[in-house]
Length: 193
Image (tube, rainbow, N blue to C red; front, side):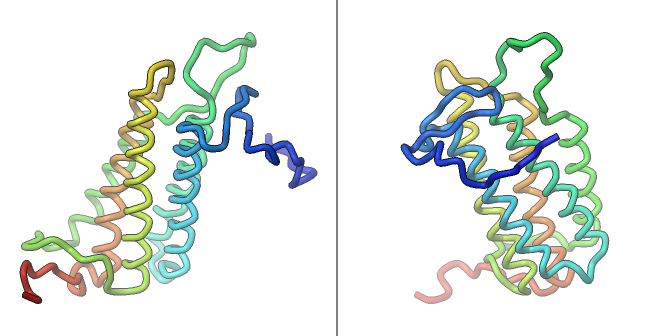
């Protein structure tokens, strides 16, 4: 359980923070950037949910995703190394969370017509917010992949799969929120030449 009695500690005033393991890191560290951008993705999903309250199915999916994004942040804040304390278990993204995203993508996508062009971010307020969440999610993915490739760092395979699948979900959810794709704004190559 997390207990926050005091919000400011002044511990970060010199540009450092601590991972869940207690290890110190600079706030500019790639791992901190990665889980910080996951948090930013979560905030974008929260903003999108202001516009999805009238669709109980989509809103429930986004609520689950927000919780899973906290799981992902906890996963990234606890580098995968042997546990130093007996019985200590770090929270990890699981394959079941990836599978659920795939099922939800398929559920939403079943209501959409196939695309004939790329989709421009926009349309309804919900779709625009979900497209924003998707682009921030893609940035988080790039940072997580870079972290996984960095010598001395590790990232779980399911964490990478989850963030990749999440951006796919957000794309399909944006189309779904755009009148089930009927109100998508399509790219017309060279239209303004």
